[in-house]
Length: 116
Image 1 (cartoon, rainbow, N blue to C red):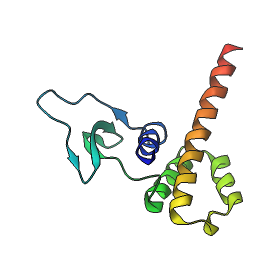
Image 2 (image 1 turned 90 degrees about the horizontal axis):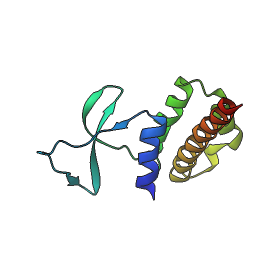
Image 3 (image 1 turned 90 degrees about the vertical axis):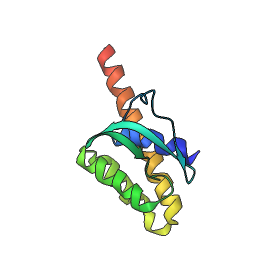
Image 4 (image 1 turned 120 degrees about the horizontal axis):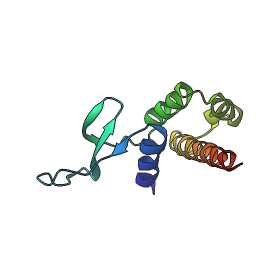
């Protein structure tokens, strides 16, 4: 499940766009991590998806990205939860799930507003 959360974070939060792998390339598995062809903010290539939902260092990149995108309410909610009392892995997963839900809720609200 963590890999799926990491994929959702990469796409929905970090802005990665998945691209089809060229026919001459094959999908590689290295250390049980899938290499994904994608377009990130820095360019096209094969990238390992960071372990956002299980590594607190990678999860803080999610917090930084949400801050950069202007989601102050997301940051305020994280402060209210007091993540310092959680294990690093629990905190990482919470940050990721909260970011995905936050952005999904925002997209849903925007879609409902467009229908009015």
